Length: 348
Image (cartoon, rainbow, N blue to C red):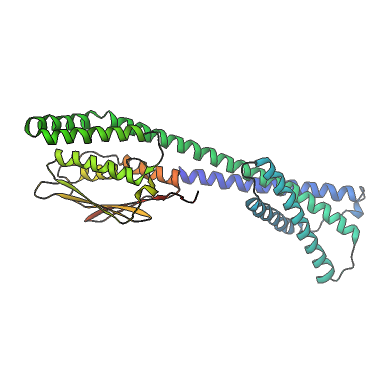
């Protein structure tokens, strides 16, 4: 499907280019006919004109593209459009005149023909106004379309993420499992039950508070992990252990997408076997650029069905919100995910 879309896109570009070239030829032929005054003997159109026309059109498009990239006013597309067209026209005419004078007078040694220079300028101006303006219109509309598609995709992923977080908040399995653990602790260890209830409420409070936020501080995320891992240790009798190696002194100055680290830990627990006497160690190593979450692979004998949407969703969120990639590396022995950290600009 993607290949077909690319073929259609390239075909559209080729057809548009040929159309511009044909239209330019017709305009120049008409101009030459007017200049000849309808006299056949004065009409001249060289055989190699299509070749040179292709080069001139290419130069016009290249100049327009370069000027457009360097022009400011991204929030004012109309001003940027006019500025690009004016500056590119002046630059194109300068290059065209330099080329015309160099080839006619210096290379071929012909005397200066001002009538030919005026006619040449008129033809070059027609070419650039048609080709440059058409390219600029097509390029601007295409960029606008890409921006709209990206915006819609961002909104879709954000909506999916919010829905996923809402599902987690009301997940009956997670809720009932932890309530069962709490019920058991109340009868066996009331002190631990009090702590469990406090951590449990803190976890849900964090999810509720962060569900509408795109980014949260790394410090808050790490505190959230402590509450989450306390519940996990109680539920699985210390079969899953978390080791955090934090190499930064101010985690509050770094940002992550909410519940990212927790989802990766949950993913490790979901897919790996562990026992109290053979616990699974989940390691998080944090430096100034990234957080590395890794664990030794111990696949469950009867794995739960997985669509891998959670990990894919995390990758999409980081790409769209931060333009950074979440890296996933898996070997026969280890599973590693590298999450980029966003540094707060403290100079503002």
